[in-house]
Length: 238
Image (cartoon, rainbow, N blue to C red):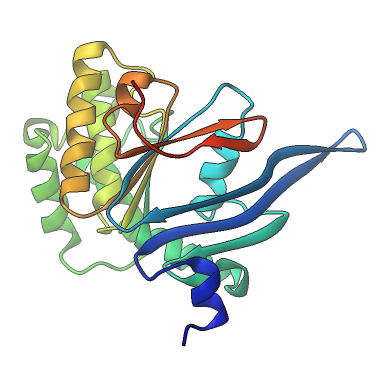
């Protein structure tokens, strides 16, 4: 017999399960709804794109899935565990160990080397052999020649690959990327898409927040948001 948590979160293959998630912010004495009853499941190893116009709730959804924000109401299960039952300190530990982020603004330290930027998450979570793993990842993504260069000396494509490499250093089960090709040319964007497909092929669950149909078309499934609601969540984008 399933426990109540297992029933609510679907089967054990779900990495992420949201049930009737609402999120609102108080602005000028009024409640502004960012998400309105969002329910979805993302399976382990799935490659999902989240699309929607500006103000649709994409970033809010990303922040909730990534444990950077909490819902106003509803249930969120991460690998079958209710997030609401986990304290802030434990959530921070789970976020560091289990979730890798690739932000649109990259968030690299400009005066730090590529290697130091990649190693940054290991400061907050111990990881044996992290330097060796960092160097292996740096080589894998074609950055060996610039490992000791400062990030402000790199091209846009190199910076994005550093951001992806940093997201992988803790060997997370889930990668969340916010508009990962938004500031890149088409050739570099194609390379970054290939990298994400490779990461997914290694077994990671990948969630891409994007407004680009070409990028979304490479995902297994596309979730569309509008006005804080899911309008569709199946099939790829043509």
